[in-house]
Length: 633
Image (tube, rainbow, N blue to C red; front, top):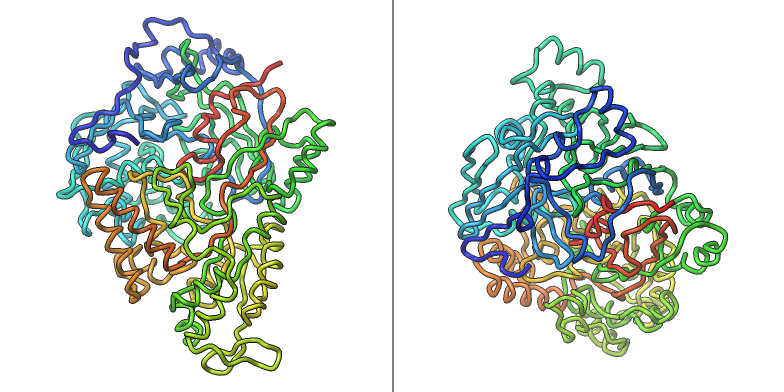
């Protein structure tokens, strides 16, 4: 993200952008031609913003495509509808292929002193229903949603607060808004560009119908009853979800809009006729008419993919599926490619430092215990058994591709050394053992660790089987328990879960200007310190503040990063946070740089054979612009 936070920075659209409506005769997508002919839809030149976003095909290695067709993808459950928002990756500002921020939905984005942010909307930009996208959509969200006690009980999101203070919000014109803080807020543009972005705007013309301040009381009450919700606030929340676009009536700025009323086993997304991006020849994107999400069970995604039921698939596929998918490739019209995974560690263990059991709590909070568990794992064996030796054993930290990578940090407490692990546990006073060799806790119970998982991955199950034998060498019994993801999250927040296994941190590709939030307790969704995270997440309204010195230091560093003014400051903060996090073994990584199978239809163009598959900052397929994908005949 080079030069992102200089004193004044304007992220402008492609140099020389012109008013396409006046200079280029644009072809109409065939699926829309009849609507235009019948007068039900304006011609493309009138639907586009005056200065659309021009996608640079040359630098991205893309070729101009053709309109039409649809692709299918397989999802595990109805909540996965959110992946369309992730994959589509239309953002106010977004990361390009070099992980630099560029304006996208916005025409420009100006930053002064890291604390004053001016947002300029593209003239003529419209929502998917044709209604103008203006400053009013930002005002509505800020005044009527983010600062409404019924809709946002905790007030504006933490990303909009600096030292607990909100910004000064100003409307400078019909297409210009400004957010000003007294101190720097480098996190602001990052949350706008995130895979799960902070939506600081809403389609006000639509959402006012469900807000008590604007709606006709009788009509609003009738809608509440029809939707079977408790009140207007619940109605507004349900119908206004932009990240999880379940409401087909909700206008969007994404390339495709949901047309299916749930619940459903199949969701059909159709092209947004007012989308703001164009190819180098001035043709409006997306090329594809439809994207179809077929919902089912995560257990059968690999099998259905191998049977040719998906045109683009990586979600719920794992390296263990590669051989089967490659063999089935011969009989179906798809190719299997191997991308690099961008997470810090494909599998990681998260000891819960907020576990409710007092005895276990005192043990888990001792760094010697966490270090011993890590030292007792033979990562080379796991790499050979699970990844055929293709992964890189190490901790849960940034990958070698990251400019923040430090080999000493990455390898801290990861060398297989059961002798040292036993020594650390003895030093803790845990030398007493039962007759079967299992160590005893200070209260006399056997040291039996139950590791909870979502049960979605046989890879995790296989890893735990191997780790079970490794930990027996140091006198610790390991048991596993699988359950639904939502239940696991509730359990570790209430302190019932002692340890969880899941994917590693998303910071694998981080640079200094990206948010280091995963390295500090800032969210209740963090399995290793959920109660501390809840405290910071809610501004002290719930949870408990950290009371372990290294965790307190991580919070201090995170707050320092949030008030930093330049990249060098942020680099120093990142490096110290990574050192503390890995030296303290706040999570136990297994192996990074793993392989992700990606299945791609043989007809699908403009998607690379080699790529990086990660939540952040690439938004999985998002960084590769699915709106530019097209189908060959």
